[in-house]
Amino acid sequence: MKAMKKGLMSIVGVALLGTQLVACGNTNTANSAVTPSNNADKTEPAATEAAAKPVEITWWNFPSFQALDGEVGKYEKEIIAAFNEKNPEIKVNLEMITFEGGPEKLNVAIASNTAPDVIYDAPGRIIDWGKKDLLAPLNDMVTDEVKNDISEAFWKQSRVGDNIFMYPINTAPFMMAVNKSIFEKIGALDLLPLDKEDRTWTFEEYKKALEAVKEKAPDVIPTGFFAKSQAGDQGTRAYLANLGVSRFLNEDNSAVAINTDNAAKALDWIVQATKDKLSVSGAASLAAADVNDLFLQGKLAFTLNYSAVLKAQNVSKKMVQFEDILLPFPTLDGSEPKLEPYLGGMAVFNNGDEAKIAASKKLIDFIANDPVWGKKNLIQTGGLSVRNSITGLYDDPEYKYAEYARKFTTDAPTIADGYADIRTFWFPELQRALTGGATGKEALDSFATKANEAITKAKAAMK
Image (cartoon, rainbow, N blue to C red; front, side, top):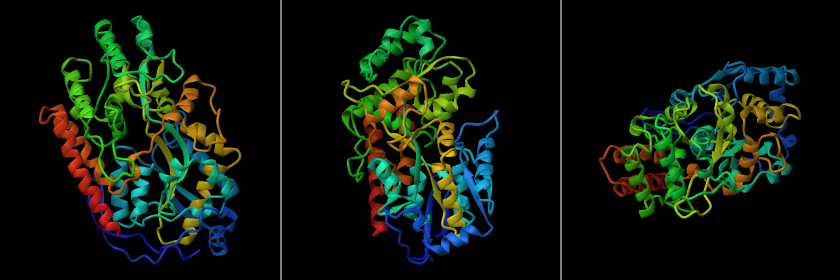
């Protein structure tokens, strides 16, 4: 294995609103990864010996695991204690970051060469960092057994070229959720597609359900939408894409595909649904978390950004007790929905210290593959395993449905060149439509123009 990179890229600016890192120079040495088929025990002796000496690493973590006793980070501390029983020479400093402020904090840390050593995150940020040469490749951790047990769709979201930059751990398809208890109360449970194994349904069936809530439960908002920021953007783009039977990007992620006539009509309907009190008012100034909070308060019948992971994490956050049920997005013609996958995994920043890189890999391996803690950690995320051989973790019908719904999983746009920019253009155009500044078609065409330019610019920068 060639020498690891000896430093993070030099960053001269952080776009605080767009969360775009501007790379100005690179003083790193050449980098080449071990092939994915290499076994973990084939790590170079130098790295292994370095990890065996006392070393201190920093782990930054979003709330990827459910809180214990209401304390965020308490479970992570238990992981570290168990890890230290097997690796006493590695000190792990934990810092919990939030989904709201964490991304900007990471940008600032990267720009000032103070990035953490290891992080649990998702492809949207991790792959962008990988493309900027900020991460250490993890190929030497991936055995043949692991490689073959995880579908190619997940590997595509975990690597750049041949380099694996994210070690995938947990997943779940992003879907909608419905407050089943509301429909039971108003005697309209038959309007939900719960008698079908696949739970698929049409736009017209969905609208009938919304009308029933408006008529019979006037104190409840039928459905939600949000466009304040890029957080949770997978919910809004999947909602529109399915209502319009469209893709967000084309098959090879080289251009925007969401600006179709059907998707534009779907966006126009969302605007009208707000006026008709079928959808939450003020969506242009609501964040994904705001809408989910309304759902957890029992004030919203449907929410757009949900998954088995969020369902588990939200148990302690419910303000009132109700049964939340997972549903796929409705489609215009009743065809199979396309669901983007949530994918969680871990990455190692290349901070120029091979001992820290090796120690960080040991922590990742423990979290993902320890015979005891690997399964415990999966369950604590509330997610499904990315491993095809690991199923049936939960005795719960909603988890069984989530496993079934993996058949609807489509490729996510998070691996597209320029994705960090693409997502910054999405919500302002939704805001324009919601506030009457543009029609659905005008907003989506404007988004397509800006996003396509970002893709072209990113591709050119990589040559």
